[in-house]
Length: 110
Image 1 (cartoon, one colour):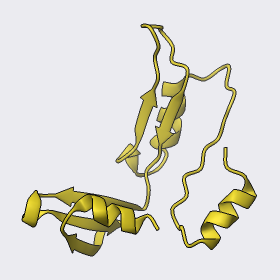
Image 2 (cartoon, one colour; image 1 turned 90 degrees about the horizontal axis):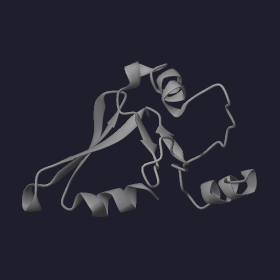
Image 3 (cartoon, rainbow, N blue to C red; image 1 turned 180 degrees about the horizontal axis):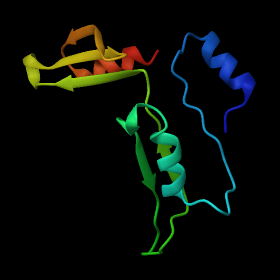
């Protein structure tokens, strides 16, 4: 869990994309039912995901991660000299870069 002080410290260092998490105890919910309620409440669930950990073939996982849709996404295509990365906000391409997508992503995160 990140504290408010840690959040403000990261924001003060110039980071503008800081992941947040919530720990919830939900006896009447399953990870899938929560995912369906949260992810599909906006934008039809496009670009959302549910990841679950399962150990030793257990029926239920220990941890679940739900990724919700965001206003901005990064889209990479091509290889080598033809590699291209786009920043898409609200469905519109707002920035394009050529070169290694991982280098672009590293710089973009700061």
